[in-house]
Length: 129
Image (cartoon, rainbow, N blue to C red):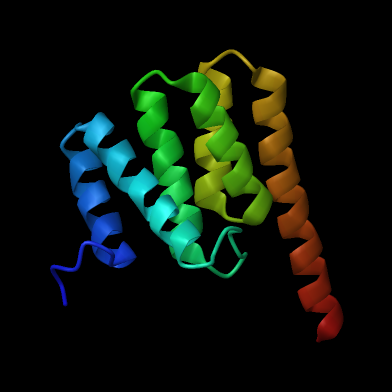
């Protein structure tokens, strides 16, 4: 079963290996394959609980960024942020992407929103005690 070409967990790990080896085109193809497999498995929309899909999207965006496909990288980053905007890994990478591409205000907004969400969560936790 570990050689299954439709196993998204295996594909994710292969994509990480490609990314680590600076093979960004292969990495982006692998992460895109995960998205296509999930679409054919009646999962056209990413669910907030589907961390593999969300992180695959983020790694696809990072791979596209490294391939200088900035338009599609931003589109995928925005999608990942929409589904999991409270994840510090996604927020940090998207903010760095925005900052490196000259959009300082957008980078600031992403980080500010994340800190604001953390303050609200902390206040709610203390209020429950």
